Length: 185
Ligand code: ASP
Image 1 (tube, protein in one colour):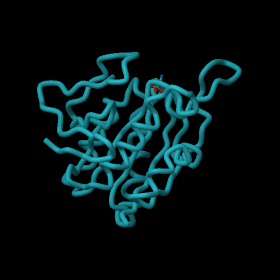
Image 2 (cartoon, protein in one colour):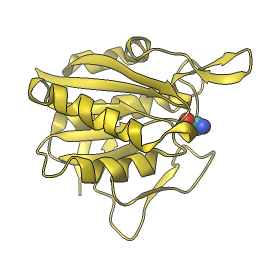
Image 3 (cartoon, protein in one colour):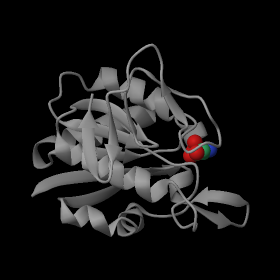
Image 4 (cartoon, protein in one colour):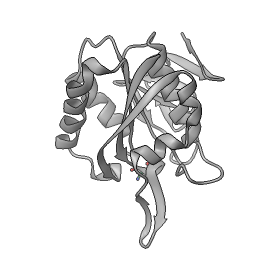
């Protein structure tokens, strides 16, 4: 069975309603517990490296992510990074240049709604990300969101409420995830 490491960085996906509004308070372990179906096709571990709103993301945080992947690169077949949507595309670009010529999938995802809400895109996005990280046919840095797989250097957040928040700019979508299956284009 393939081994996947999920890195938690915060964002809406990990938010709980707290004293001052939404705050990333859900741990990576807790996030994993919301997608029990992932255990059917991979062995997933989690690592909490940050827990911030992605509007506070800085270049030093990109290095933290790249270093965590480097430190665990040989142990895992793929990586999933949970991230806020506001700067997810910038992180995807940065990681695409920090981690080049990798044969393993490095999948960034997030959500429009927290994972503990009744109606949420979090569980689908997270599970779809595990599907892509496990499948391995699309290597490198990519965003999986709203069922689409987008090259890390081509993504842009184009909608702030729609579950299909990201578009691929001047480049085809790399694939789609449907019913726990990756369909690469
Ligand atoms: N402000 C949040 C963030 O980027 C928005 C989100 O995750 O959708 O961390």
